[in-house]
Length: 418
Image (cartoon, rainbow, N blue to C red; front, side, top):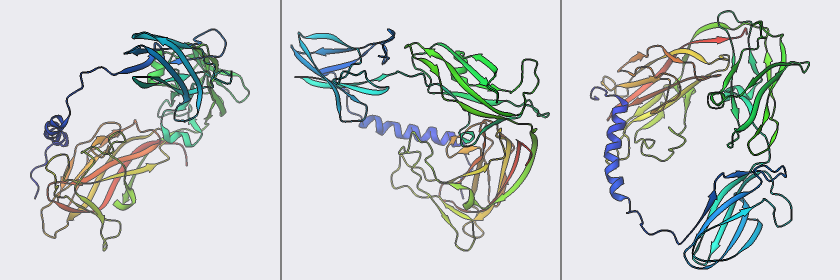
């Protein structure tokens, strides 16, 4: 029998404290001696050698610990081929600089992309990265990845909600913009929407409601959205187009209940794509199918061989895609049914909705629930998921073993007519 369940975040905090001490003790003392040789980009790390007189050069700095010469080799990032070799004059000890205008050994200007410059002296070498930016590439995308596999749609005739299509900007210019606008045209090519991109738009995105200046819905059909502008490196143009379908349909609220087998909804993925090998992801427990109960899963918490850096839980992650929910799941709740793996036992199963493993997915996490037979989470909002679905996690703790037999998911979302 487990002890009364504490907050998972408290468990994480305790683990972090336990882990921090041995990790800190294992770290070597920082070296105090300066490097024998260093080189880096001075100022902006992007430049645009396109002949327009704006941001045509990149400046590098390097330091010599003893008098000598330096050889520079420039390559496309990740590629072995040397595109430029330059022997710099002998210099005295100290800091020096070198400016490059983008011409390669073949006399051509460097193409658009990421590059590295390796500086080699008698005392050592150093490599620094920079970017040749010769294009205006900013484009609009649906804010949620699930929308990108289909034609983005907006429903301006909806009555229960004033619908708008959330959009974000991809390939933002790191140098910033001298000017940039969103331009949307109708099927005939006429401009129906034009908006200057603000700093807030760049970080938070924007939404288009497919209405004219008087607030009336635009005619149904296929529209095109694009970013037009110029960056501070002198590049200007039109970014890739996004096709948007302005629908004649209306969105309506849909409520439904689905009864699911745990094996059918289980997803196996790292708890965090940025921490694939950290101690939070290395769970000692096991999750396995149950032979005589099709679709069920047995969660058996484990005993960790190492007292720190591992987690005894047995945990599974679950995802229910709901493609009809074009504006995401507005709210949902999850219930489970099951029993301790040992008949008559008092082991607990735990459930949290709208969570991807130990980390919150998106939206507001609902309250954890636990039971020896079944329980239901409260309703929780999940409106930030976009076209996608519902997430939840199930687990056991300490030395418990629990068989989860089914999940019941209640959903509420906006959908067009089927």
